[in-house]
Amino acid sequence: MTELGMGMMRLPLIDENDQTSIDIEQVNEMVDTYMDAGFNYFDTAYIYHEGVGEQAFKKAVVERYPRESYKIATKLPLFIITEESQLEPIFAEQLNNCGVDYFDYYMLHNVSGFTETAWKNVDLFSFIEKKQKEGKIKHIGLSTHGNAEFLEELLVEHPKIEFVLLQINYLDWDDEGIESRKCLEVARKYNKEVMVMEPYKGGFLADVPDEAEKIMKECHPDKSVVSWAMRFVATMEDVNVVLTGASTLEQLESNIYEFKNAEPLNDEEFKILKEVSEIINSNITVDCTKCRYCVDSCPEEIDIAKIFDLYNKHKILGSDDWSQPGNAYLNYSKLDGVGIASDCIECESCIEECPQQINIPEVLKDVAETFETEGYGFTD
Image (cartoon, rainbow, N blue to C red; front, side):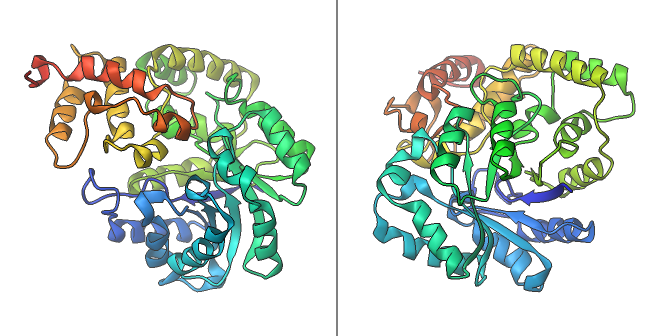
């Protein structure tokens, strides 16, 4: 039976330019709505919201609900680990951040070529197995954006891994780089529990191009665009949890409704989704899911995820139809302590952190050429 999980990567903010300014009152409402709907699986991570995401979980859930009423999943931050001496302090800090004595699900975060310095040089797998024996973790796993071959090598080498968190959605299903379908098949082959992240691909599948939406509406006039993405993952065999990344109460309520009313897709609908995928791929300029891993690594403090979102909207909607992205970029550029696209020094640290393998410095050049013009208020 598939569960709906509440992902806490993109929580509502009081200040949209400050990832630490979590609107805890709205988060409390979201948690209450989610729990009242009969769900109880929360997913967070050490690095979410620039290090305060786990504490938000503590405030909204742990301090307001009994321990037996919820399950918590969090992740060991491979991005910052270089030696074994870091493991115990970080794990202890996470328990304190979350306000719990044990984690229901604990995973190595983004095991991939980008984090191999950690998982190849430090015995992380033995560490989490040890914590499981101590009763500090109930289930051990990993999240990865690697391809199917990479995932299979990991599962063969580390058979005690119980579950995997995979990026699965209809847009990535047959993508040659992400290989959602093949990764799910590998997990099934080794009898691992599967948790799904990015069912809406960072919001892309909740706001598709008009041409794609028209096709969906012709088939089901009364169904939302979001329902198609949710149905794709919620009715899939061998999926244990589907994470929502809602950033508002309204989004969460929509996700809950769509999950509870999800029906399996038929052959005709699968064909429509394939056509929709082709349209979306032809319109997407930057395949960014707004995970923000790149932002944390940028020495120039460029909010890459934010400006890529504006850039995509600009490209999809066209400057003649909607100038708001350019105006929003100008407003962003006037904030204190932020870098703009042209500030990029091409150090490439962001590329190493990007699960989608985007050549970020190259795209930033295009962003600068698009937005940093006199037409949007920039002057030499």
